[in-house]
Each structure stands twice: as structure tokens, then as C-alpha cells.
Image (cartoon, rainbow, N blue to C red):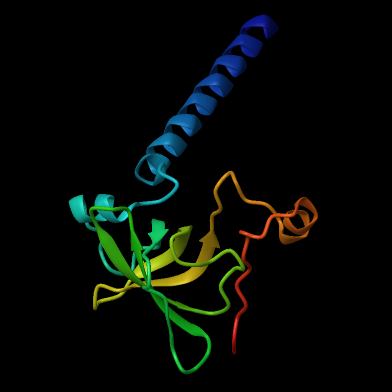
Length: 148
């Protein structure tokens, strides 16, 4: 076989391997392509307990309950038509509050409560750091203080 044919064969094999790897990766990520599941998504297609997922939505009004131990927080994540109870043990982010966006990473327990190991608080596009809000003369921004 000539050197030209060997290079062409090698290039085609490399291309086929690259396409195969891409297809394999795409099929593995197909079910996890969504950044997070909303409560309505989980109501339509439930996830088995113990499977690690992200649950996203809004923290329901008056749903945050702090346990006496000072580090356990129970709250409800809702997207309007559906909601899920969430339990988190740890220190939540500063932006975590009622009526704000949240993404909780964790898994459902056998009792149906979502046990989060990480909480990511989301803010809207109107967010302004407290330092800038004071300079701007705005007072509507409130910061949450944690009591332990």
C-alpha cells in the first residue's frame, strides 16, 4: 500500500472515531440536557429516589423554616402549578430568600422530600449590589442576615 493511501485510511479512521465519540457523548447526555427540572416536570415524569438531579424554581412565599439546630432549612420550590418540599443542611447563599429563584442540587429521599446538598440562588436582571444601591440612593434592596 502506498503512503498516500495509508494516510487517507488513517485520516478516515480518525474521523470515524471522532464521530463515534461525539455520538456516544450526545446519547449519554440526552436525558441530562436540561439545566434543571422544574416541579411541573417532576410531576409529569417522576425521578426515582436517590438519583442526583437539579431542581429549579421559585422559593414559595412564607415557606422557609429554619430548624433549631441552626443549619437545617426546609422550604418549598414552586413553579406555579406544582411544588416540591426541599431540605437543605448548610449555610445558604446570601441571595437565598422567599420569592426568589433557586436551583437545588440533590436527590429525592424515600419520603418524597428533595434533600439538597447544594443551593444556587438566582437573581433577576434588576439585582444591584448593596454598595451600589447605597451610592445610587436606592433603599429597596435588602440584605438577609443569617442567625445561627
